[in-house]
Image (cartoon, rainbow, N blue to C red; front, side):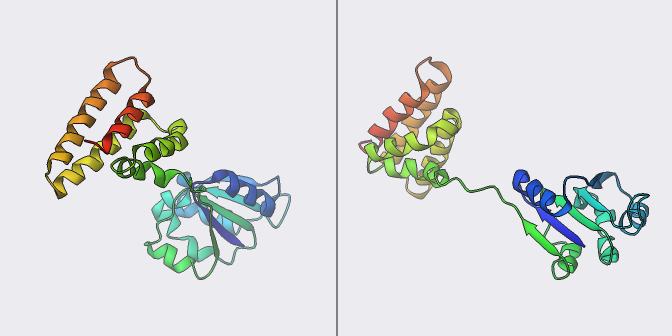
Length: 201
């Protein structure tokens, strides 16, 4: 049995590994393997058991060895290959996907992430609502990076329509960016102040 687990959520992936392989299994670093190592891993027995439980980490980073994996699908052992990312365009992936189980373990999406991008657009029509949305995301965002995001959105607006309102917004955001980097005032208060003014620029 060979399975491939992939994705950023290593906690969930490792839990699934333990459910299948148990608590005692061999761990092999895939980046260190050569094609010559594969027969002893996939076909060789251990001193204690004919059937081995093996976790191989990041084998696809080792392209020449990973390409040989389809030759060992009839292994008698329980083997899970744990990958952070898997190239779904590769010929090896296309060969494997119909023959073995490949499970993805993505990190859960933050429901507030889309708010980060909507706050500037909202501020242009409703500053109070934009501040309410800011309160939902500011605890896990960097204020200077957030300001940079608003500047990039304002630049996009300016490229689409080079009007007075767009110029004022860019000027105010440039001043906000400078204030965030040079004053000791609470950064989110400065951003809130800008958001409340944005609709009247």
